[in-house]
Image 1: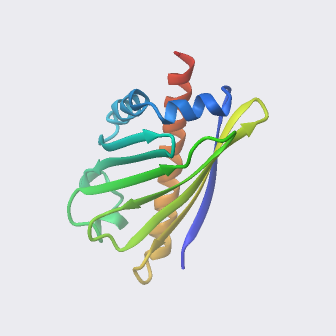
Image 2: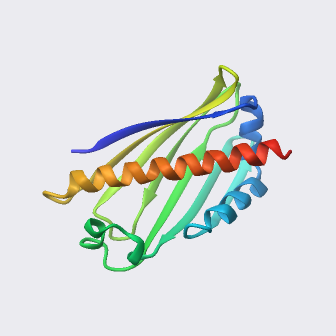
Length: 166
């Protein structure tokens, strides 16, 4: 079984400005610099072209910072590789992401949609977590999705701040 969650980030800027930020390597560097306050992060690969955006991020979470239930499964620091892909902007943009952990017992995937919102732009993310461990898989899925919401909120705040300064 798997669990899903939706999150919508709202921006006061139009969607084309938000997309321009997503296509700007300086924006991503600002994001990971801010996220380093919480854990080791870096941009591994980045490419933006007329056909879209492809980005690979590494997040490193020390094992000591993981909840006890996660430490029963993860025996060393958790290295998360998150790959995001956005299609071209055509008044809106859609994308996908996947997060992987080497030897991890499950998957985390999602879709993104950037569109015009009531007062600017909305970036809606739908995520699905699946952990293939009997008895604790469901609790780990909930834990992953809850923590993911915190990451998305922080990233959205960084993007909003980055846009406001431009």
